[in-house]
Picture 1 (cartoon, rainbow over the protein chains, first blue to last red):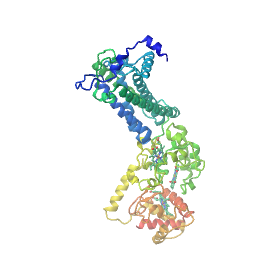
Picture 2: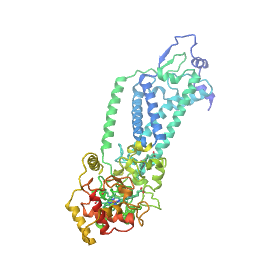
Picture 3: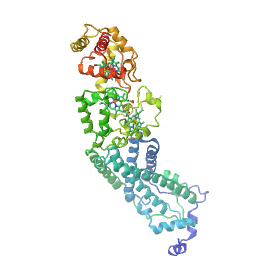
Picture 4: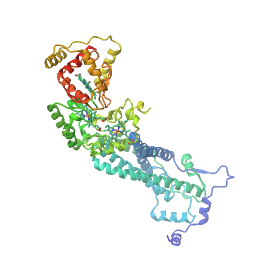
Amino acid sequence: MDDAEMQLTFPMPTNRTTIANKPMPSTDRNMTTRPVWDLFIRSFHWLLVTAITIGAVTGFILGPTWLRMHLIAGTIAVVLVVARIIWGFSGGSFARFAGFVAGPRETLRHLAELRRASAPRHVGHNPAGGWMILFLLGMILLLAITGTTVLGGVFKTGPLGFAVSYDLGSAVNKVHKLLAWGLLGLIALHIAGAIYESLRTRENLPLTMITGRKQARPGDHLPPSRAAHPRSAALIMLAGGALGTAIGLALAQKPVPHLPITPLDPTYAQECGDCHIPFHPSLMSAQRWRMLMASLDSHFGEDASLDEETRKKLEDWMVAHAAETVDTKPAHVFAQANPENPISLTATPFWKTTHKAIPDKVFKSKPVFARTNCAACHKDAETGMFYPSNIEIPAEAQK
Amino acid sequence: MKLFPNLILSGTLLAVALGAPIQPAQADPARDAIIAQFKAQAGVSSFSAARGKKFFHAKHAGGKPETPSCTTCHTNDPRNFGKTRVGKVIDPMAVSRNPQRFTDPKKVAKWFRRNCKTVLGRECTAQEKGDILTYLSSI
C-alpha cells in the first residue's frame, strides 16, 4: 500500500486521532456519553448471539436428535437478520448500512491507518467492522438457505420438501457444514476485532452493546445524522414476516414426491410383524427383499415360512414399494449393504456407524431388547422415515 | 399400526389376569375342530395334557441353539406374556388367558410348522400337536 499517496488524497490531522483515542480525563466523573446502539440493535445482537450459539451447539455437538431445536434456532436467527436488514434502511444514524458500509478505498485507508496507529475513532462501526456485519448477516442467510435445502432434500420436510432431491440435499449438506465453520471463523474475527478496538480506543465495546452508550470525545468520527422510522420499520417487518410465513407454510403444504407408502399393507403388517416390527419396504431394495423372501424357512435363525400364495403376494407388494421407489434418507443410507449379510439393516455400514455410540447395555435393556427393535427408539420406524426428532432412547434403557 | 389394539387386548388380558377369577378354558367349536383333525391324523381317540406339558417345557435338540424350547419365547408359564427374540410381546398361550388361541386352523398350522422347525429342526407330529393344544387348553 502506498501510504504517501493515501495521505496525499486524504490528509489526516494526527492530533485529532490522538485525542479521540483517549478517554476524557478520569477526574471528570460526568463523562459525557451519547446513545449509539439503540434498543433494537442491542436486542438483535444478543438474541442473535443466543440463537447462533444454540444453532452451533445443536449442529456441531449434540447431533441429529436435536434437529428440532436446531431448526428453531436457525429460524429465529433468520428472522432476526431479516429484521436487522430492514432496520439497516430505516433505523437511526448508527443502524443504517449507509452510515457504516464504507467503499473499498475508504476501507483500505482505514486499515492502513490502523497499521500506522493513526486511525480515527469511529463511534459507530468502523469500516472493517462494518464489512464484518455484512459478512455475518450474509453468512447467516446462506446458512438458512442451505439449511432449508438440506431439510427438504434429506428429511423431506419444510418449505423445500417438495422440490429438492435427496442427492441435492445431501450435497448441499456439505456446503451447509462448510458455511457453519465459516461463520464460526467470522465470529472469532469479530470478537478479536472488538477486543482489539476496545484496547485501542480504551473503551469496553462489548459493554456498550449492553448500555447502548459510548463516550463522547472530541474528534469522534460520526456517521451522517439520520432519523429513525421505527413505526414504518415495524410495519414492514410485520408485513414481511406475515408474507414470509404464508409463503413458507404454503410451500411446506405442497405434496412431497416419492415418500414411503403409508399405511402398510395389513397382511404384511400382520405376517411380518409377529416377531418384530414390520420393517418398511422402503428400507431395502427390491433385490434384497426378493433374497429375503426366498429364504424365509431359514430366517435369521428362525423358520418364518409362509404358504406360497401369501409369500408371493407379500413379495410383490414389498417390491412395488422398495427403496428404489422413494427418495428418503433411510432408503439411501441403507442402500450400501453388508455383503456378508445383505438382507440385514443392522449389519449395514451406515447402521453400525450411526449406532456405534449407543452402549450395548441399552440394546439389551428390557424396553429395547434387541438392536432390531428399531421402534423402541425410533417412534416413526414403521413409516420408514426415521426422522431425527422422533428418536428417543427409552429412559429406562439408559439406567 | 397394531400397537393400539394390542395394548387394549393386553390391558384386558391383564385385568382378567389380575382381577377376574380364572375361568376354566372355554370350549370353542373351531378349536375343537382343530383338535379333532389332529386326532384323525394321529389315529387316536384322546390326547394327554401331561405329555403336552412335558413336551412344551422340555429342552429339545436338533433346532437352532438360540431356541432350545417352546418356553424360550412363550415363558415357563404359558399363562404369562411371552417375548420374541426381537422383544415383541407375545400374548399368553393359555386358552384361559387368551380365548382366541387355536381358533384359526391356518394360523395354528403356520406356527406349529415354524416353531417346531425352529426348536426341534423338524415338524411336530399330529400326536405332539394334539397333546400341546390339550395342555394349553387345560391351564
